[in-house]
Each structure stands twice: as C-alpha cells, then as structure tokens.
Length: 234
Figure 1 (spheres, helix red, strand yellow):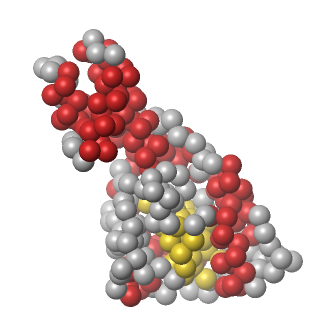
Figure 2: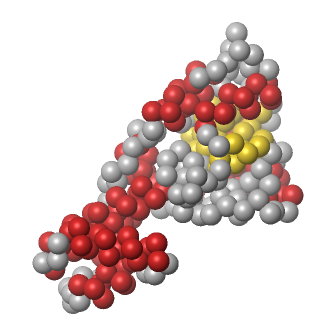
Figure 3: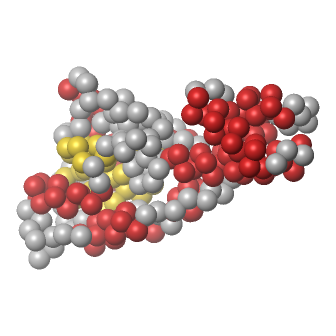
C-alpha cells in the first residue's frame, strides 16, 4: 500500500530538475540571432564567440560586443534577452517519471528557487513543470532567497509540523543551510560535470546534506529508508 499522508517533498530547480547550462545555451542562441540580425555577423560565429568566452571565464556579453563592434547593441539589451527569452529546454523522461511517482505517492510537492520571476516562470513553462507542484516559491516574488529560512518556513506554516519535509538541491554553498536548521531531510544531487555552480563536500556540518545521490531515480530509496515505502520503485 502507498501513503500520501506524511511526506512534503520540495525541489530546487536549476541544476536539480534540469541542467542550467541548457538555459544558458538557449539564451545565447537567442542573443546570437539578435546580434546577427543587427550586425551582419553570422549567427553561428556569434554563438561560438559567446560560448567560448563563457567557458574561458570571460564576460560573454562584453566579449561579443567587442567582437562585433556594434554601437547600437548594449549589454543591457543582451541581459534583457537572456532573462526574458522563452527557453528551448526540456525535462528528461527520467525526471518526468520521478515527478509522476512523487505526485502519486507523497502528500505534497513544492519548489523553492532563487531568481527573477519571469525568468524562472519561463523555465517552468518550457519544462512543463507547473502541473507537478502544489506550491512554487520564487525568490523575487517571495521577497527573500536561499538560505533564508523564510522560504522554507512557508511550507511548515502552510502544512504544519506533522509531516516529514525533504528538500533536494545541488548548491552546496547555500541549498542545505535552511533545511538542515529546520530539521528537514536534505538531499544533494551530485554534479555530473555540467553544473553552473560547482560543488564541494569539504563543508561544516550545517552545510552538509543528509543524503547524496547521483540521480533523481534514487529518490524512492530515500523514501523507503525514511518512511517504510515498501516495494515502491520507479
């Protein structure tokens, strides 16, 4: 038998449910198209300049403007495209399966993500994620960002303390401070080498996640350990 009465499972978004580098590349493609239309440079050449600058640790926006030497394009314009474009990103079939599994087997599913409202909402729409979440906390809309406990206390205030709260993220610098302080179960999804924010596990105790996993498909294993979700698997 399954139960839906004792787990509130809360996700991070970027580099947890999808790879943020995919959003970055999508934005760079949009920017490259815009610059190409307004400078005469080929779109693929502009894109290559931007992505090479990014991986070199340079400022891609400044680098590409120096490259095309346009007086009519500003960094402000490029940032606006980056933040507000409709991204070409997708949710993996595997992660869809995980979310469907949780939707069927836990009480509530939530999201806590830092970022601008339009940018994060566009990501959620492109990924088809809104149907899975009962509540969504975006820092710009909420008025505070991780590691502020307010973003996490929202769920405690809404659902009460008689539940097991689980938070899964990837950023070892800030994702687990608040859930650990609130005695949530903290889970870290490891970087496969593509994450925007690199991880370290040489951490003081308040920063360390309780569990470390390599794939979201390991979530049922954690649920079994915590709540005797016997014979449940993806």
